Image 1: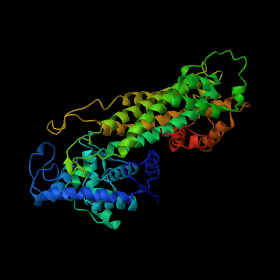
Image 2: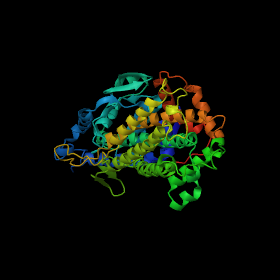
Image 3: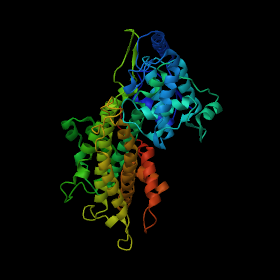
Length: 512
């Protein structure tokens, strides 16, 4: 298994993407250990003193005014974690949990949390040996931190709850023992440092971002297929059009589609004497729509990269100022906004793709393709209901794209009276991506089928690679057959990123 060394405060989107897609192990740059130790020394000084310091020798939330005796500070942290293990619902995917743990490492590594190096070492060791806490998906409102899900992570470190190890779910203490690890007894503030933070919301938002970027690449490919299948015009891809507007995503989307369609015999066959003056918007405005979605994803990416590098627990140890200060970095409002932006982009990429599917199966609009792309319409229905499925998925995504960050509600006896709802705002992105990948999978099937109906005219060499790769998994549709497996295979090709990769075309980069 690959091990990445990450520097807190300087981690890139590429680093995080590697952690997510490959489930790489993570270690912090050893240079950060000195700052971690200094912050812990300041916490130890506070424990020995008489002043009340939130979360160190006081209760939590509405109970912050209750002073805790020094001999009870370890019990305080234990009770905090166990009482906050109130997550419900299905366990989150393993890859999300590992990304969450890596993000927690990065936050602790900023040297403002006050934990011992033992805490950092155990998270690193759990990532390295494959001990993954079982974390329920529901229960966080995105402030004060992702308390419930992060408590389940911390509980597993203490030997409570459950963890997955070598493919089996078992009690966390047994998983740690099997991996040669020892549960940790948390010291002053360490429980609070582990559960105060935005790492659950950020992990899910990043997963949504990375999946959406793959889908955007795939959409450029499937839209090029659809354009050629309906004998659409490439004139709207003229580079000067996009340069005159100036948006990066639009410029890059147009450039990518031009490259994909270059050399198509189908296109060359109707450049002259085509009676159609303009194509519908779903063909003509693809760079403007998908490109805009790409730009929105980049804006969200910038926010999430900052958040991934941030210290987000409370209170924070300001070593240089010799202070332990309560603040609000645990509030996931930036992540909530980013998740809503990603949701909008996913919904719009799917909305215009669905209209292309509707176009290509409609004989009135598809420029002489057979109805529903079947060679024997009437007896056969072809892709009639596959298009209806894409309409259902598109509509579902429209509803899911409604903002979550505006839906605050007071919690914890009105102490935490404004919350971000970033957790489920980010978590819904997984379902939205599944829907989008299936819409694009149907477009892939329809686009390839449409291009094959144009024979003996051939599409471009790059798009032919896409058709050939699809045909390894899904045969050309002739007579009607049980279609559900075809849709799932096509969606899997989209989700894997393989459809874009097989073109060997330079795709737009996520980074700014």
